[in-house]
Image (cartoon, rainbow, N blue to C red; front, side, top):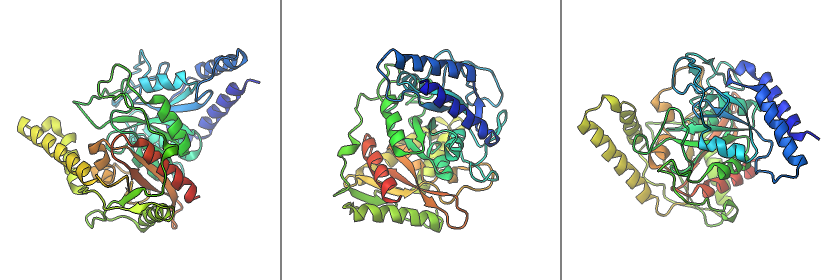
Amino acid sequence: MNTVSMSIKSALASLDSAVELGAVVDRDDEAVLTRATELDAAVDQETPLGALHGRAITVKDWIDALGFACEGESPERTGRQPRHDATAVARLREAGAVIVAKTQPGGDHPSHGRCHHPIDPDRTPGGTSSGEAALIGRGASNLGLGSDSGGSIRLPSAWCGVVGFKPSYGLVPTTGHFPRVGYREDGRTVIGPMAATVADVEAALRVIAGPDGIDPSCAPLPIGDSNAVSMHGLRVAVVEPDDRWPIASSTADAVERARSALVNHGAVEAISPTVDLSESLDISQRYWRRASLSGLECDQQLRDWDRFSSRVTRTAADVDIVIGPVVADIAPLHRDLVGEDYIFTLPWSLTGWPAISLPLGADAETGLPVAVQIAAPRWHDHVVLAVAAALEVLDA
């Protein structure tokens, strides 16, 4: 039986059925089906199979994948063809995955057009891993690869009802991200998985994590065992409410349901680390406009960033997990996004902590997805995944 070919044909048909989303920017179905045939032959030859054998995967168009154009941040279709896979893409292929499409890197793109929300086309899916969130939210893809600097995986995941994971900074190589990112130039951007389930996110993360001998920021640390994480005694904090940044009642209810579910299963409440949302926005905004800053202003921005990260880390010494909003409210009507939209995701980008956007119900009035954000101190990715998997079951 040509099981991989059948699965990949089904995946391509799913992309066809969601074309109105404007989520796909490049496909090569002939090459994709040829690869599927090769994987079927590997089964017939009893070749050892990879962890993601035959899985169809979509990739954000800021991550290089051989055989697909990658425009990066260019506002025009340049036709740029990468000469190598990004490390994360190469590892997915080695694990048997089939890259079936490149996806829209923004809600509105000068060349690719508008990407729509998977449930309500009048609304934005968020950015910049927009196409990934839209496709997975529609069910036209169930596993993808995005990138996140200040919330570009987590925000669209929250608005589209998708599980989106930002790994610890330095866990997954960013080699092959286009535009290029590096820890001295950036220190925030990560490549991470997006999927319909926590289990699929974890499976992909374990494939793509680890040093590649090219990205100097990538640490040789194994991912911990999420199955060994017990909810009993887990120290759970909730992001303190901030009157300057109010959240919708449906978002507040989701955060409370998450807290309550964990406490009811043995977790203990802890004091929230000191996270000043307005300060994280200010530091991030100065980072975004750093090209216009003087040398002294750049130096001050870096000092403030270091102080912020140190304070959060120090005040989180007695915390295992932090729960809070991903976004203030449901997906808005199409509009340009602003820094304030990312107010709840920015802190964990500045600290390099792992954080996940987990769908947790729907808004009663609109039926649109609602999500919670789960973060943990750096390198505790397995704790985030364990808590997200538990909540996925507890809230089912």
